[in-house]
Length: 404
Image 1: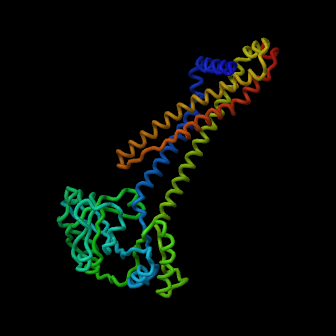
Image 2: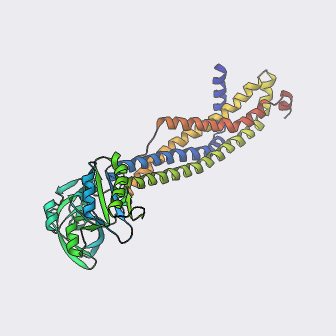
Image 3: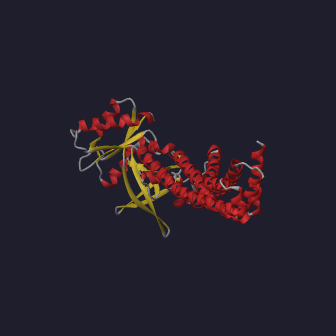
Protein backbone atom coordinates (compact mmCIF):
# COMPACT_ATOMS: atom_id res chain seq x y z
CA UNK A 1 0.00 0.00 0.00
CA UNK A 2 2.91 2.31 0.82
CA UNK A 3 4.40 1.74 -2.64
CA UNK A 4 1.18 2.77 -4.36
CA UNK A 5 1.01 5.90 -2.26
CA UNK A 6 4.53 6.74 -3.41
CA UNK A 7 3.51 6.15 -7.03
CA UNK A 8 0.60 8.60 -6.61
CA UNK A 9 2.94 11.18 -5.07
CA UNK A 10 5.41 10.80 -7.93
CA UNK A 11 2.63 11.07 -10.51
CA UNK A 12 1.27 14.22 -8.89
CA UNK A 13 4.76 15.75 -8.73
CA UNK A 14 5.42 15.06 -12.43
CA UNK A 15 2.02 16.50 -13.45
CA UNK A 16 2.59 19.61 -11.31
CA UNK A 17 6.04 20.07 -12.86
CA UNK A 18 4.46 20.23 -16.33
CA UNK A 19 1.18 22.04 -15.65
CA UNK A 20 0.56 23.47 -19.11
CA UNK A 21 1.39 20.24 -20.92
CA UNK A 22 -0.75 18.22 -18.50
CA UNK A 23 -3.71 20.58 -18.96
CA UNK A 24 -3.47 20.44 -22.75
CA UNK A 25 -3.38 16.66 -22.45
CA UNK A 26 -6.48 16.73 -20.29
CA UNK A 27 -8.34 19.01 -22.71
CA UNK A 28 -9.74 16.21 -24.88
CA UNK A 29 -10.90 14.32 -21.78
CA UNK A 30 -12.43 17.50 -20.33
CA UNK A 31 -14.38 18.25 -23.51
CA UNK A 32 -15.61 14.67 -23.85
CA UNK A 33 -16.63 14.21 -20.21
CA UNK A 34 -18.29 17.63 -19.94
CA UNK A 35 -20.27 16.87 -23.11
CA UNK A 36 -21.43 13.49 -21.78
CA UNK A 37 -22.46 14.95 -18.41
CA UNK A 38 -24.25 17.92 -19.96
CA UNK A 39 -26.10 15.85 -22.56
CA UNK A 40 -27.18 13.20 -20.07
CA UNK A 41 -28.30 15.65 -17.37
CA UNK A 42 -30.15 17.94 -19.81
CA UNK A 43 -31.64 14.96 -21.67
CA UNK A 44 -32.94 13.41 -18.44
CA UNK A 45 -34.20 16.82 -17.32
CA UNK A 46 -36.14 17.24 -20.58
CA UNK A 47 -37.62 13.73 -20.23
CA UNK A 48 -38.69 14.49 -16.66
CA UNK A 49 -40.21 17.79 -17.77
CA UNK A 50 -42.09 16.08 -20.60
CA UNK A 51 -43.41 13.40 -18.25
CA UNK A 52 -44.54 16.00 -15.73
CA UNK A 53 -46.16 18.17 -18.41
CA UNK A 54 -47.98 15.26 -20.00
CA UNK A 55 -49.27 13.54 -16.87
CA UNK A 56 -52.50 15.46 -17.18
CA UNK A 57 -52.54 15.84 -20.96
CA UNK A 58 -52.56 12.13 -21.74
CA UNK A 59 -55.73 11.58 -19.75
CA UNK A 60 -57.92 8.51 -19.87
CA UNK A 61 -59.31 8.83 -23.36
CA UNK A 62 -58.86 7.90 -26.98
CA UNK A 63 -59.93 9.49 -30.23
CA UNK A 64 -62.05 7.73 -32.83
CA UNK A 65 -62.36 9.14 -36.35
CA UNK A 66 -63.22 8.13 -39.90
CA UNK A 67 -61.24 8.22 -43.12
CA UNK A 68 -63.18 9.26 -46.20
CA UNK A 69 -66.71 10.61 -46.45
CA UNK A 70 -68.47 8.24 -44.05
CA UNK A 71 -69.25 9.50 -40.57
CA UNK A 72 -70.13 7.82 -37.29
CA UNK A 73 -73.70 8.07 -36.00
CA UNK A 74 -73.76 9.64 -32.54
CA UNK A 75 -76.30 6.99 -31.54
CA UNK A 76 -73.63 4.34 -32.16
CA UNK A 77 -71.20 6.09 -29.82
CA UNK A 78 -73.94 6.44 -27.20
CA UNK A 79 -74.63 2.70 -27.44
CA UNK A 80 -70.89 2.03 -27.09
CA UNK A 81 -70.82 4.10 -23.88
CA UNK A 82 -73.74 2.07 -22.50
CA UNK A 83 -72.16 -1.26 -23.51
CA UNK A 84 -68.87 -0.88 -21.62
CA UNK A 85 -68.71 0.21 -17.98
CA UNK A 86 -65.14 1.44 -18.43
CA UNK A 87 -66.33 4.14 -20.86
CA UNK A 88 -67.50 7.19 -18.93
CA UNK A 89 -68.56 9.59 -21.69
CA UNK A 90 -67.75 11.14 -25.04
CA UNK A 91 -67.77 14.34 -27.00
CA UNK A 92 -67.68 15.12 -30.68
CA UNK A 93 -64.86 17.45 -31.68
CA UNK A 94 -65.24 20.25 -34.19
CA UNK A 95 -62.11 22.39 -34.41
CA UNK A 96 -61.44 25.40 -36.57
CA UNK A 97 -59.14 28.41 -36.70
CA UNK A 98 -60.40 31.90 -36.12
CA UNK A 99 -59.14 35.34 -35.22
CA UNK A 100 -59.83 38.01 -32.65
CA UNK A 101 -59.13 41.65 -33.46
CA UNK A 102 -57.97 43.75 -30.53
CA UNK A 103 -57.22 47.31 -31.61
CA UNK A 104 -54.79 47.11 -34.51
CA UNK A 105 -53.62 43.61 -33.65
CA UNK A 106 -55.17 40.38 -34.87
CA UNK A 107 -54.72 37.32 -32.67
CA UNK A 108 -55.16 33.75 -33.91
CA UNK A 109 -57.38 31.41 -31.91
CA UNK A 110 -57.97 27.66 -32.03
CA UNK A 111 -61.67 27.04 -31.45
CA UNK A 112 -62.78 23.60 -30.25
CA UNK A 113 -66.40 22.73 -29.84
CA UNK A 114 -68.08 19.77 -28.23
CA UNK A 115 -70.32 18.59 -25.42
CA UNK A 116 -69.79 19.33 -21.75
CA UNK A 117 -67.40 16.34 -21.57
CA UNK A 118 -65.02 18.44 -23.67
CA UNK A 119 -63.90 19.84 -20.32
CA UNK A 120 -62.23 16.48 -19.53
CA UNK A 121 -60.16 16.62 -22.71
CA UNK A 122 -57.88 19.15 -21.05
CA UNK A 123 -56.63 18.64 -17.51
CA UNK A 124 -55.91 22.35 -17.01
CA UNK A 125 -58.09 23.54 -14.15
CA UNK A 126 -60.78 26.18 -14.40
CA UNK A 127 -59.40 29.17 -12.49
CA UNK A 128 -62.30 31.58 -12.95
CA UNK A 129 -65.99 30.93 -13.56
CA UNK A 130 -67.25 27.53 -14.71
CA UNK A 131 -67.33 25.35 -17.77
CA UNK A 132 -70.39 25.64 -20.01
CA UNK A 133 -73.27 23.54 -18.69
CA UNK A 134 -75.45 20.88 -20.24
CA UNK A 135 -78.32 23.35 -20.34
CA UNK A 136 -76.16 25.88 -22.20
CA UNK A 137 -75.18 23.12 -24.64
CA UNK A 138 -78.83 22.16 -25.19
CA UNK A 139 -79.86 25.79 -25.77
CA UNK A 140 -76.89 26.57 -28.01
CA UNK A 141 -75.92 29.55 -25.84
CA UNK A 142 -73.21 31.78 -27.28
CA UNK A 143 -70.73 31.13 -24.47
CA UNK A 144 -67.08 30.12 -24.36
CA UNK A 145 -64.22 29.07 -22.12
CA UNK A 146 -60.79 30.58 -22.81
CA UNK A 147 -57.33 30.11 -21.31
CA UNK A 148 -55.40 32.57 -19.15
CA UNK A 149 -53.00 33.41 -21.98
CA UNK A 150 -55.90 34.43 -24.20
CA UNK A 151 -57.60 36.33 -21.39
CA UNK A 152 -54.47 38.43 -20.86
CA UNK A 153 -54.05 39.03 -24.60
CA UNK A 154 -57.70 39.94 -25.25
CA UNK A 155 -58.71 41.72 -22.05
CA UNK A 156 -55.47 42.50 -20.23
CA UNK A 157 -56.43 40.37 -17.22
CA UNK A 158 -56.85 36.71 -16.30
CA UNK A 159 -60.33 36.93 -14.79
CA UNK A 160 -62.28 37.66 -17.98
CA UNK A 161 -65.57 36.03 -16.91
CA UNK A 162 -68.49 38.00 -18.32
CA UNK A 163 -66.42 39.68 -21.04
CA UNK A 164 -67.54 39.67 -24.68
CA UNK A 165 -65.26 37.90 -27.17
CA UNK A 166 -65.81 38.52 -30.89
CA UNK A 167 -64.39 35.87 -33.23
CA UNK A 168 -64.13 35.85 -37.02
CA UNK A 169 -64.01 32.48 -38.77
CA UNK A 170 -64.79 31.46 -42.35
CA UNK A 171 -66.21 34.89 -43.11
CA UNK A 172 -68.61 34.80 -40.16
CA UNK A 173 -68.52 37.03 -37.11
CA UNK A 174 -69.96 35.86 -33.81
CA UNK A 175 -69.83 37.19 -30.28
CA UNK A 176 -69.37 34.91 -27.27
CA UNK A 177 -69.71 35.53 -23.57
CA UNK A 178 -66.82 34.23 -21.48
CA UNK A 179 -68.15 31.92 -18.73
CA UNK A 180 -64.87 30.33 -17.68
CA UNK A 181 -61.10 30.79 -17.81
CA UNK A 182 -58.80 27.80 -17.50
CA UNK A 183 -55.05 27.62 -17.00
CA UNK A 184 -53.09 27.85 -20.25
CA UNK A 185 -51.75 24.55 -21.58
CA UNK A 186 -48.01 23.82 -21.59
CA UNK A 187 -45.90 24.30 -24.71
CA UNK A 188 -45.37 20.55 -25.08
CA UNK A 189 -49.09 19.99 -24.72
CA UNK A 190 -49.81 22.35 -27.60
CA UNK A 191 -47.14 20.64 -29.67
CA UNK A 192 -48.61 17.16 -29.23
CA UNK A 193 -52.25 18.19 -29.59
CA UNK A 194 -51.60 20.37 -32.62
CA UNK A 195 -52.93 23.53 -30.98
CA UNK A 196 -51.97 26.88 -32.50
CA UNK A 197 -52.96 30.28 -31.16
CA UNK A 198 -55.05 30.90 -28.05
CA UNK A 199 -57.53 28.26 -26.94
CA UNK A 200 -61.30 28.85 -27.10
CA UNK A 201 -63.84 26.14 -26.23
CA UNK A 202 -67.51 26.44 -27.16
CA UNK A 203 -70.60 24.20 -27.21
CA UNK A 204 -70.85 22.18 -30.41
CA UNK A 205 -74.46 23.40 -30.73
CA UNK A 206 -73.02 26.87 -31.40
CA UNK A 207 -70.95 25.42 -34.23
CA UNK A 208 -74.09 23.72 -35.53
CA UNK A 209 -76.05 26.96 -35.51
CA UNK A 210 -73.23 29.02 -37.03
CA UNK A 211 -72.03 26.64 -39.74
CA UNK A 212 -74.84 24.12 -40.14
CA UNK A 213 -72.93 20.99 -39.04
CA UNK A 214 -74.92 17.84 -38.36
CA UNK A 215 -74.44 16.77 -34.75
CA UNK A 216 -76.08 13.39 -35.37
CA UNK A 217 -73.15 12.28 -37.55
CA UNK A 218 -69.55 12.93 -36.52
CA UNK A 219 -66.19 12.30 -38.14
CA UNK A 220 -64.15 12.83 -34.98
CA UNK A 221 -64.94 12.11 -31.33
CA UNK A 222 -63.10 11.67 -28.04
CA UNK A 223 -64.20 8.80 -25.82
CA UNK A 224 -63.35 8.93 -22.12
CA UNK A 225 -62.32 5.89 -20.06
CA UNK A 226 -62.26 5.42 -16.30
CA UNK A 227 -58.55 4.58 -16.09
CA UNK A 228 -55.43 4.98 -18.27
CA UNK A 229 -54.86 1.22 -17.86
CA UNK A 230 -58.07 0.52 -19.77
CA UNK A 231 -57.53 2.95 -22.66
CA UNK A 232 -55.80 0.50 -25.02
CA UNK A 233 -58.40 -2.21 -24.45
CA UNK A 234 -61.37 0.14 -24.85
CA UNK A 235 -59.79 1.70 -27.93
CA UNK A 236 -59.54 -1.69 -29.65
CA UNK A 237 -63.03 -2.79 -28.56
CA UNK A 238 -64.53 0.57 -29.43
CA UNK A 239 -63.13 0.46 -32.94
CA UNK A 240 -64.42 -3.07 -33.55
CA UNK A 241 -67.87 -2.16 -32.19
CA UNK A 242 -68.19 0.95 -34.34
CA UNK A 243 -66.93 -0.89 -37.44
CA UNK A 244 -69.51 -3.63 -36.87
CA UNK A 245 -72.32 -1.12 -36.28
CA UNK A 246 -71.46 0.73 -39.48
CA UNK A 247 -70.90 -2.51 -41.41
CA UNK A 248 -67.32 -1.41 -42.16
CA UNK A 249 -65.34 -4.41 -40.89
CA UNK A 250 -61.99 -4.71 -42.66
CA UNK A 251 -62.45 -1.48 -44.62
CA UNK A 252 -60.06 0.54 -42.45
CA UNK A 253 -62.59 3.37 -42.45
CA UNK A 254 -62.73 3.70 -38.68
CA UNK A 255 -59.51 4.50 -36.82
CA UNK A 256 -58.58 5.19 -33.23
CA UNK A 257 -55.74 7.20 -31.81
CA UNK A 258 -54.17 7.33 -28.35
CA UNK A 259 -52.05 10.32 -27.37
CA UNK A 260 -49.70 8.02 -25.46
CA UNK A 261 -48.43 6.69 -28.82
CA UNK A 262 -47.19 10.17 -29.78
CA UNK A 263 -45.58 10.56 -26.37
CA UNK A 264 -43.78 7.24 -26.79
CA UNK A 265 -42.53 8.28 -30.23
CA UNK A 266 -41.40 11.64 -28.87
CA UNK A 267 -39.47 9.94 -26.08
CA UNK A 268 -37.85 7.53 -28.55
CA UNK A 269 -36.71 10.40 -30.75
CA UNK A 270 -35.29 12.25 -27.75
CA UNK A 271 -33.41 9.12 -26.63
CA UNK A 272 -31.98 8.67 -30.14
CA UNK A 273 -30.80 12.29 -30.27
CA UNK A 274 -29.19 11.93 -26.83
CA UNK A 275 -27.43 8.74 -27.93
CA UNK A 276 -26.13 10.43 -31.09
CA UNK A 277 -24.71 13.41 -29.18
CA UNK A 278 -23.13 11.02 -26.68
CA UNK A 279 -21.53 9.16 -29.58
CA UNK A 280 -19.97 12.42 -30.76
CA UNK A 281 -18.79 13.06 -27.20
CA UNK A 282 -17.36 9.52 -27.16
CA UNK A 283 -15.24 10.37 -30.20
CA UNK A 284 -13.90 13.34 -28.27
CA UNK A 285 -13.02 10.99 -25.40
CA UNK A 286 -11.18 8.71 -27.81
CA UNK A 287 -9.20 11.67 -29.16
CA UNK A 288 -8.44 12.68 -25.58
CA UNK A 289 -7.20 9.16 -24.83
CA UNK A 290 -4.89 9.27 -27.84
CA UNK A 291 -3.57 12.57 -26.50
CA UNK A 292 -2.81 10.91 -23.16
CA UNK A 293 -0.95 8.11 -24.93
CA UNK A 294 1.03 10.60 -26.99
CA UNK A 295 2.11 12.71 -24.02
CA UNK A 296 3.02 9.63 -22.00
CA UNK A 297 5.24 8.40 -24.85
CA UNK A 298 6.94 11.81 -24.82
CA UNK A 299 7.30 11.54 -21.04
CA UNK A 300 8.90 8.09 -21.33
CA UNK A 301 11.39 9.46 -23.87
CA UNK A 302 12.26 12.41 -21.65
CA UNK A 303 12.70 10.24 -18.55
CA UNK A 304 14.68 7.31 -19.89
CA UNK A 305 17.68 8.28 -17.78
CA UNK A 306 15.48 8.36 -14.67
CA UNK A 307 14.13 4.92 -15.58
CA UNK A 308 17.68 3.61 -16.08
CA UNK A 309 18.83 4.93 -12.69
CA UNK A 310 15.80 3.43 -10.91
CA UNK A 311 16.32 0.06 -12.58
CA UNK A 312 20.02 0.01 -11.81
CA UNK A 313 19.14 0.64 -8.16
CA UNK A 314 16.88 -2.41 -8.13
CA UNK A 315 13.48 -1.07 -9.17
CA UNK A 316 11.27 -3.85 -10.53
CA UNK A 317 9.63 -3.82 -13.94
CA UNK A 318 6.21 -3.78 -12.26
CA UNK A 319 7.17 -0.67 -10.29
CA UNK A 320 8.04 1.24 -13.47
CA UNK A 321 4.83 -0.03 -15.10
CA UNK A 322 2.65 1.13 -12.18
CA UNK A 323 4.40 4.49 -11.98
CA UNK A 324 3.48 5.42 -15.55
CA UNK A 325 0.02 3.80 -15.44
CA UNK A 326 -0.92 5.76 -12.33
CA UNK A 327 0.38 8.96 -13.87
CA UNK A 328 -1.69 8.52 -17.04
CA UNK A 329 -4.71 7.50 -14.97
CA UNK A 330 -4.32 10.55 -12.75
CA UNK A 331 -4.16 12.88 -15.75
CA UNK A 332 -7.42 11.42 -17.10
CA UNK A 333 -9.09 11.40 -13.67
CA UNK A 334 -8.29 15.08 -13.12
CA UNK A 335 -9.59 15.84 -16.61
CA UNK A 336 -12.72 13.85 -15.84
CA UNK A 337 -13.40 15.72 -12.59
CA UNK A 338 -12.94 19.08 -14.33
CA UNK A 339 -15.20 17.84 -17.15
CA UNK A 340 -17.91 16.82 -14.66
CA UNK A 341 -17.84 20.25 -13.02
CA UNK A 342 -17.96 22.03 -16.38
CA UNK A 343 -20.77 19.77 -17.59
CA UNK A 344 -22.70 20.46 -14.39
CA UNK A 345 -22.22 24.20 -14.80
CA UNK A 346 -23.19 24.12 -18.48
CA UNK A 347 -26.37 22.18 -17.67
CA UNK A 348 -27.43 24.77 -15.10
CA UNK A 349 -26.64 27.58 -17.54
CA UNK A 350 -28.63 25.91 -20.34
CA UNK A 351 -31.56 25.41 -17.96
CA UNK A 352 -31.47 29.11 -17.02
CA UNK A 353 -31.34 30.18 -20.68
CA UNK A 354 -34.31 27.96 -21.61
CA UNK A 355 -36.31 29.26 -18.65
CA UNK A 356 -35.57 32.89 -19.56
CA UNK A 357 -36.15 32.49 -23.31
CA UNK A 358 -39.04 30.00 -23.40
CA UNK A 359 -40.43 30.00 -19.86
CA UNK A 360 -39.92 26.22 -19.52
CA UNK A 361 -38.85 24.90 -16.12
CA UNK A 362 -36.35 22.22 -17.18
CA UNK A 363 -34.23 21.12 -14.24
CA UNK A 364 -31.11 19.09 -15.19
CA UNK A 365 -31.13 15.63 -13.64
CA UNK A 366 -27.90 14.61 -11.91
CA UNK A 367 -27.23 11.10 -10.65
CA UNK A 368 -24.35 10.73 -8.19
CA UNK A 369 -23.71 7.14 -9.26
CA UNK A 370 -23.56 8.24 -12.89
CA UNK A 371 -21.06 10.96 -11.95
CA UNK A 372 -18.88 8.48 -10.09
CA UNK A 373 -19.11 6.11 -13.05
CA UNK A 374 -18.03 8.91 -15.40
CA UNK A 375 -15.04 9.70 -13.17
CA UNK A 376 -14.03 6.02 -13.06
CA UNK A 377 -14.49 5.75 -16.82
CA UNK A 378 -12.28 8.77 -17.46
CA UNK A 379 -9.56 7.24 -15.30
CA UNK A 380 -9.98 3.96 -17.15
CA UNK A 381 -9.37 5.77 -20.44
CA UNK A 382 -6.08 7.08 -19.12
CA UNK A 383 -5.02 3.64 -17.85
CA UNK A 384 -5.99 1.98 -21.16
CA UNK A 385 -4.19 4.47 -23.38
CA UNK A 386 -1.28 4.75 -20.96
CA UNK A 387 -0.66 1.00 -20.97
CA UNK A 388 1.52 0.97 -24.09
CA UNK A 389 3.85 3.83 -22.95
CA UNK A 390 4.04 2.27 -19.46
CA UNK A 391 5.00 -1.16 -20.84
CA UNK A 392 7.55 0.46 -23.11
CA UNK A 393 9.13 2.20 -20.09
CA UNK A 394 8.99 -0.94 -17.95
CA UNK A 395 10.72 -3.11 -20.59
CA UNK A 396 13.77 -0.86 -20.87
CA UNK A 397 17.01 -2.38 -19.69
CA UNK A 398 19.14 -0.25 -17.34
CA UNK A 399 22.05 -0.10 -19.81
CA UNK A 400 19.87 1.04 -22.76
CA UNK A 401 18.08 3.58 -20.59
CA UNK A 402 21.30 5.08 -19.18
CA UNK A 403 22.95 5.09 -22.62
CA UNK A 404 19.99 7.12 -23.98
